[in-house]
Length: 196
Image 1: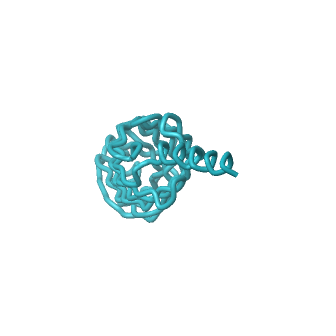
Image 2 (image 1 turned 45 degrees about the horizontal axis):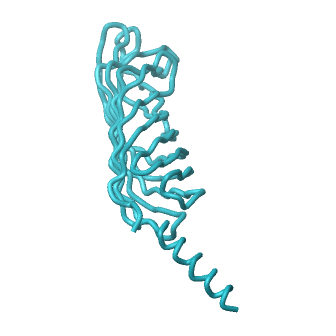
């Protein structure tokens, strides 16, 4: 009986040593890969405060800005259009599930949903230019690892296509359809959330 009690105390103290602080803030930088033919990548910056509601599940708010160097879209006739700059800002409620409780190596998978604010400029077709903005409700799925205070993740941001005002190859007004979903490859630092 004494041996059982001693083993119980030792196991609880081992768990207590691995307990992590519930609040942390992730700050990440990365590379954005937009959808669409002819699209080129850009940069991502994100800040995400989180709270662990249970040791393996953290909920948070991701605030992210992504700027893409170039993207392709199509007008209402199906003609391809090019744009020089496209930016997306997002505010997503997130949840991450951690498959291990150890601070040194924690693989995770997560998802989120919220608002994407989109802006594009210098849409060119037939020598004419236009610009536009829109807001879309979208989602995100991700997976990655945390090791100590460092975080690496791969995210897929699912954003519905936008329809912007533009011009066709003849210079006549036309609706421009732009793909908005993008992949994010991110490396970050976690402030807080370490062992108690």
